[in-house]
Image 1 (tube, rainbow, N blue to C red):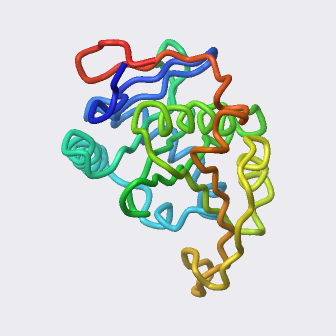
Image 2 (image 1 turned 30 degrees about the vertical axis):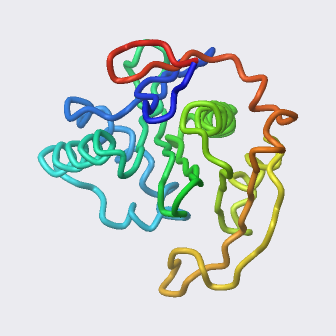
Length: 208
């Protein structure tokens, strides 16, 4: 099946629903972020602009959806299976340029250390290679963020470099950034290639 040009709007794993955000998700997203601010501010610069109002959050989700529909960037929600709880957020980000995507992730504070970041990243790695059909996927994180760095290591990514002062600012200074990468020729032997999931396009037609 040729899935090129048909991004996955919805991905289902054993425990998660990973899907494009909708404006009506604003209250659930705000609750997840507000409960996790201290945890998120340790590693996520955008968390310093929080808390946002429901109106601001709705506007942000409209922007995410618009960019998703235009194939400009793919920002995903991470929900529990009945979609009653936002467990976190992720994305297949296009900032690396042509033929590559970057996976980012954050997890709600009460759901950390339960394998959700690994599960979501494994699913999106498979989506990136089999649906988006890119040649390379990267994960970037601070060397100090040991939990985040453990995710690409578990998924068979290679630590290709640590770039000094290339990451987002923390306490007023840019931090170092670890670059983890998985290439298309490495993907078939990776854990992500064996991930059980279903993925659907914008019309609900199955992609994987």
